[in-house]
Image (tube, rainbow, N blue to C red; front, side, top):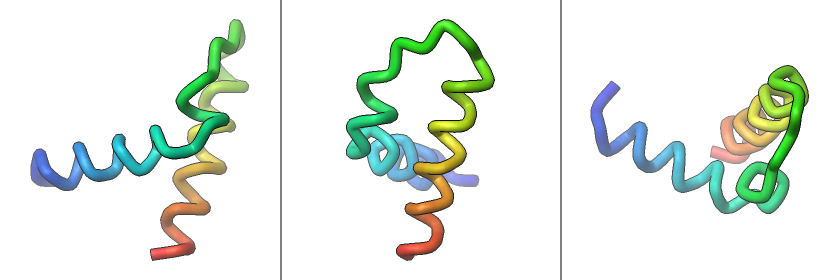
Length: 45
């Protein structure tokens, strides 16, 4: 994976308020939020 692709993916994830404002105490909750946001991005592209 090229660096630009990784930066693009991270910037797309940051556009989701649920991802950019997470302060979860549990790792599995944060991972679940990231997974849902990444899936939505993947399905829309």
